[in-house]
Structures are given as C-alpha cells and as structure tokens.
Amino acid sequence: MLLGAVADDLTGATDLALTLSREGMRAVQVVGVPPADFDFGDAEAVVVALKSRTIPAAEAVSLSLDAARAILSAGAEQIIFKYCSTFDSTPEGNIGPVAEALAGLLDAPLVLACPAFPANGRTVYQGHLFVGSMLLSDCPMKDHPLTPMTDANLVRVLQQQTKLPVGLIPYSVVDRGGEAIAAAFTEAETKGDRFVIVDAVTEDHLRAIGRAAADMKLITGGSGIAIGLPENFRRAGKLATRKADTTFAAPAGRAAILAGSCSAATRRQIAAAIAAGVPALKIDPIAIAEGNTTAAGVADWLASAGHPHPLAYSSADPDEVRSAQEKLGRDRAGGLVEHLLAEVAITLRENSFSRLIVAGGETSGAVVNGLGVAALRIGPEIDPGVPWTRSLDGGSPIALALKSGNFGADDFFLKAWDQLK
Ligand SMILES: Nc1ncnc2c1ncn2[C@@H]1O[C@H](COP(=O)(O)OP(=O)(O)OP(=O)(O)O)[C@@H](O)[C@H]1O
Ligand SMILES: O=C(O)[C@@H](O)C(=O)CO
Image (cartoon, rainbow, N blue to C red; front, side, top):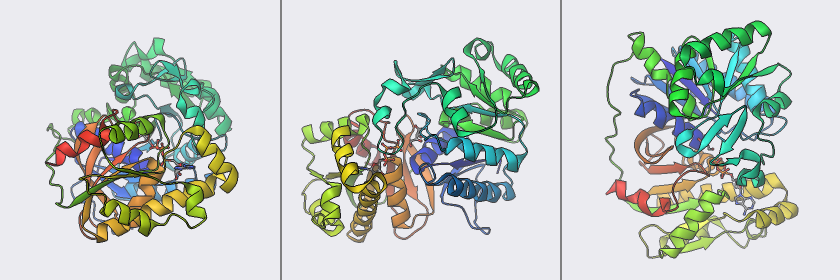
C-alpha cells in the first residue's frame, strides 16, 4: 500500500477512491476501521470510510486515529484526510480536531487544507470557497440539515476549529506551480503556521499542489487534492503506469433509489425522476416518529411499485427540514430517517433487490452499515465524484451508487442505470 486515506463520510470516501482509481492506482474502499488482520489484497490505495463528520469531535478524533493507525501498519506511506469539498463542519469540528490529531500522530509540522474540486465547481480563491459562481455561504449549503456553512472564508472557519495558527497560500503563489508552492510551504512553516489553506481553481493547480506535497506525511482536503499524488509515486518508481480498471459486473436483480439527502442537487434529481415517470414515495420524519411510516411499509411499496427503479425519499426543502427539526430535534430527525432507510435497504436485499442508488453521505453510511458491507470495489463513473461500486463482502453482492448530496447532474437517477446494462 502506498496511499492510505481516512474519509469522514461514505460518499466522500467513494469520491476519493474513484479519483485514485482514475489516476491509475488500485484502490479499495473499506467501510469503518479495518481489523488488524484485514486483507487489503493488492491495493495500492486504501480509503477508510468513517461516519465521523457530525459525531462529537472527540469520537471523530479517536476513530480517525484508529483508522490511520490501521492503514499505517499496513504500509501506507502518506495519509490523506478526506472531508467534504464544501468543508462541511461546525465551529466544534470535526475538520480541525481530526487534522490536528492526525498531524500529531504523523509528526507533520505543516498541514495543507484544500477542498477544491473544480470538476464539481468547488474552487478556493484567496482562502474563500466557491460553489460554482457563488460563495459557499450564499449557496444552499447555508441550509444544510447538519452542517450549515455560513462563512466562505476557510482560514476563519478552520481557525475556529483549532488553536494552531492557520495561514493561506494564495492563488498568486499556486498559479506559479509546484516549486513556488513548495517554497511557500517552507516559508509558512518557518513563520509558525501549522495549517495552510491552499487556493486552487483548476486541476492544474491541484496537480501542482500534489507535486509540492510529495514529502508531506499528511494531506487534507476534498478528493481533488489527491489528483496529483499518484504521480509522485510513479516518479519515485513505486507505481506502474496503467489505465484505470473499470471492469465491473453488477449483480442481476431488482433496483431502487433511496434518497435522504436534502441538498438542492438531490431535490432537483428527484423532481427530474418524478417528471420522467419514476414512482416516488415521500417519507416524513414526523410520520416515522409517530409510527405511521415503517421500513416494512416503505420496502413493500418499493417492491410493488411496478417500475424498474422506484424511489423513496425523505428529501425536503429547508423549511420542511427546519419544521421537522423543531419538532424532533436535529439529530433525532436525521437519525430516524437514516435508520429507516437502512432498514428498508436490508429488507429490499432480502427480496432480491441488488442494485441501489443511495443519495446522501450520512444516509449512505447508514445504509451500507445496515447492509453489513465492509469493503467496496470502485466501478465506472456516473458523474464526477460518483461511481458505481460493488460490495466485496457482507452477504449477497450488491451494486451501490453512493451519491454525495450535492453531486450529479439533474438526470442522475435516470441515467445511472445505463451503465449496468
Ligand atoms: N425531511 C428531513 N428532515 C430532517 N432531516 C432529514 C430529512 N431528510 C433527511 N434528513 C437528514 O438529513 C441528513 C442529510 O445528510 P446526508 O449526508 O445524507 O445528505 P447530504 O448532506 O446532502 O449529502 P453529503 O453528506 O454527501 O453532502 C441525514 O441525516 C438525513 O437523515
Ligand atoms: O467532497 C465532496 O463534496 C464529497 O465527496 C463529500 O464528501 C460528500 O459528502
């Protein structure tokens, strides 16, 4: 193993594993901290998917350290801490505390932080995160049910989460390429910075940052930050030059879509699916709490919907989410939906469903944990950051497209199936 990664949610891990696989590494995604005797096979990159984005910071730190120790002892030479390209976090963390703890474990004097993912419209300029043409704080992430992002200034956001000094490597340096960036890393370290937000607007910037970070033990960011890393191993003669392996056989069986993401992108995808005639069942967290909506009922509805890929969704607009959260509390509302959708997935698999699209990182984490899947193989890309995956264990095989809330074109729920034909 050359590269090891700790990802704070499941869809984020898939996104990163896809990037590494596209850049020619044999990548495997593991769900949860792998046991000491876990067989990573011939993987050159391993991405450990945690569900640590919104749990208490101390728990996120402890899980992330366990995951990092597991991949280090399996031989990883460099560690990536993967978080969301929209820097999803709260003033308590968990990006700052986890990055700090991993830096301590790895004895890393300077940690770079760069969530840029240009293919999905996330760019960082003067330390400010943009989503498309909007500042992060103006985009729908301001209404996220768990991690509302109301400040686009990442130096300020990260500084709230750590006592260690946070600096900036601006566009004017990054645009000059790898050597200038490496010199800026040295300068930042000399100045006493322990974290640096690094601007990046294009994939060329990310490749240059990757090159400059060849000797850094810890790298943090979105999946984009990994684009330039495999090349460092190739340059060092440790990684063969090969094309991404996208051979993929999806198990035959029935299909369904489960959506727990309330992102604007997922809501557009649901609207497009309904407009195209996909039967859709809306799930209300209050009805779950009152016992009026059950997993068995939802699974029955999906099984008898009479469509190749019916949809069950709890996705709702910010007002509806706010109203459910006022009645139930934020965590309980989310937990009820996640638990229900996980139970639905289990029941579906028992009833010969073997192809699922799941929308939302937390939702995907709940579903995959519910299904008992411990490792995933990465298949073909559906849209930037979202591949089909196939379970490597955990009972009868299942094809899963785990969609990050904000990713995918509007017709994602319609077109994704074409790749399984
Ligand atoms: N109607 C609803 N009311 C309140 N909370 C909801 C509702 N529907 C879903 N949720 C919760 O909102 C959270 C959505 O988070 P999730 O990570 O699944 O989606 P996302 O944030 O859009 O995706 P990603 O993390 O990949 O960006 C989950 O905890 C989910 O259970
Ligand atoms: O980086 C992203 O935006 C995604 O991989 C993600 O983490 C969504 O939860």
